[in-house]
Length: 372
Image 1 (cartoon, rainbow, N blue to C red):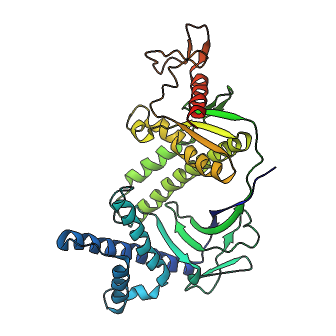
Image 2 (image 1 turned 135 degrees about the vertical axis):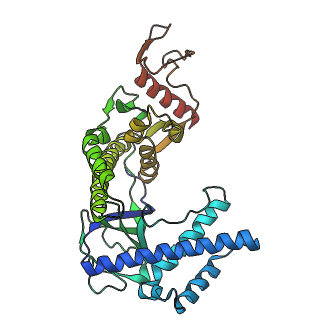
C-alpha cells in the first residue's frame, strides 16, 4: 500500500503567448530587474572593497526606494515593485551561499546572456478560476495549460521568463502540494551511464542513447554558419541568432523529455537505485569526449533521480567516485590493473565473461547497497 502523502514544493511550467502590450511590459520589467540586481551588487562590492563593510538586504531595499524618487531611476516606478524586491532577495540569497562557501561570488547579469525573468509573489498576481493576471496588466495571460494543476492549487509565486529562442514561459510554484509515495517494490538496480548506451542496468538491459545533438548537428551547423556571416548589430544577425537558439532549444527539449521518461521508469520499477558519483565537470574538459558527454547529459539524470526518489518513497544511493566499477569482477571481486576504454568485454580468471558496462552496473549496485 502507498505510504502517507508528503507535502513538497513543486513547480509547474507552462508556455504562454503574450499580447504586444504584455510583451512590452514584461520586457521592461526584465530590464528593470536586471538593473536593480546589478546596481545592488555593484554597491555591495564597492562597500566591501572601499569601506570594509557588508550591505544588508534592508539597506539595498532602502536604496531602491530612494532611487525611485530620483530623476535618474524614476522609471523603475513604472513597473511592478514586487519583481524588483525579489531581485534583491535573490542577490541576498546569492551572498549567503557565497559566505557559506556553497557558491562563487555573485556575477552581474548580462543583457544578452542572462536569463530574462521576473518573479511575482501573491501580492502581484491574481489567480482566479484558472486564469492568471499579473500586476500592471489588465488582461490575463494566454497560458496553454498542457497539464492540469492539482485541485484547489494556490500558487505562492509566479515566475515569468523568456528564453533565447523567444519563447515565453510562466512557472507556478506550489508550496504545499501533497504527493503520495508509490507502493513498495522488491527490486533494486544499478545504473552505469555511457555514450553508446545512455544507461546500462545491472539487469543487463541497455537503454540506447538518442544522441539528440548529433541528429540535429547539420541543421545546427548550418544555422551557426549563417549567423557567422551576418554583420554584428544588424537585424539579420538577430534573426539568425534566433534560428540558432531555436535549434538548440529543440535539442534541449527532446533530451530533457527523454531523460524524464527514463528516470520516471526507473523510480516506478525499483525501490533502490544505485548510481556513480561522476566528476562530469572534469570529464567535459577532455576535448575528445566533451561533446558526446554533454549530449548524453550525465549530470541531469542524477538530479532528476534525487528529487523523484524523495517524492515517491524510493532510495537513491551513490557509489564513491573512486570505486573501480569497471575493473572489478562482479562474480569474484578480483581487480584488474588496467581497463582501457576500447575493451568492451573481458574474461576474469575465475571464468566469468563480462560485458564492461553490465559488470560496472552490477558493481555499482553492490557498492551502493553496502554503503546504504
